[in-house]
Length: 367
Image (cartoon, rainbow, N blue to C red; front, side):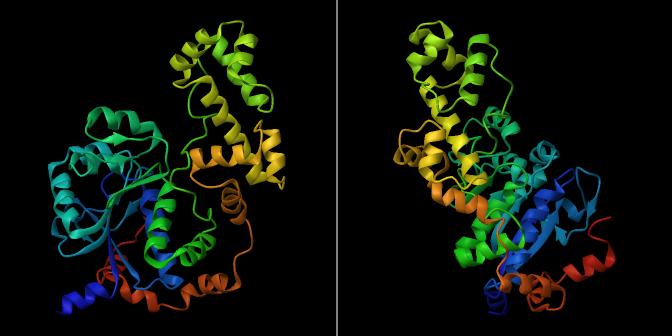
């Protein structure tokens, strides 16, 4: 009974690290939950960092984190199990002990998550089979090849499929953890945490990881390369397939084939995506009304802009603007006072893992 009461008194979060894990992957999760505690999460989160055999986590940058314990000895109920990413993810995914214990802990966890390339470990454990997932865009194709039963979507910032969550590269862990905070405590607290961390007020999970303008090298074919540049510079022009074909001196059918081979999409869909990204840039950097944004980006109406935004980002243009411009607004006075008082008020620290003080005292968390 005492154990059950202890479990109910806090939300137990177990973060799994390993050699060559990304310290930023770990920090984004830990700091977000800690900020939630400071700002009043009920029940508070108790975060434990564990690793195979309890070894210190030597990160990709060469810094070392002390851990609270060994992955092999973790037992009991877990609220959130998170596997970090990092350049050591493939070695970790090939380690039988790591995979076996992650698989063992999953049924005891209310939700299971991976950050960045940590999806490799979840995939190796079989926890992602038949699920839609994401990972760092640079490793998505490799994950898909190695695990054909996993449906890898390289675009979103994070994906929820049932009780399994996967996030994209590195700092998208902030977005995922803020989503956890909102699920558990409501949108108001999640917004306060985002303000305290001076980050976006929760980007939608299906927002693209990387802008299409920098996601890859320019098209190989000179016709498509020239058209891509023209479309990017002149989104308000007539960019219909017929107009593009005339500009390129090819037939509409041939243009469609070239776009399919070079860009993996149709001319119309490519133009719509470019216009939507241009609109996103204007919404986050200017005070233009929606009608002006739509006009500058080649959309015939604000409704057409709204539909394109919903399809690409899953939110309306107005909501997108609030998310991306709202993070620059001053913090609420109470949020600021709470964050400043963190060093003076330690009530929430009582919920930390009982070994945390010892681990901090025995070895510096970062050395």
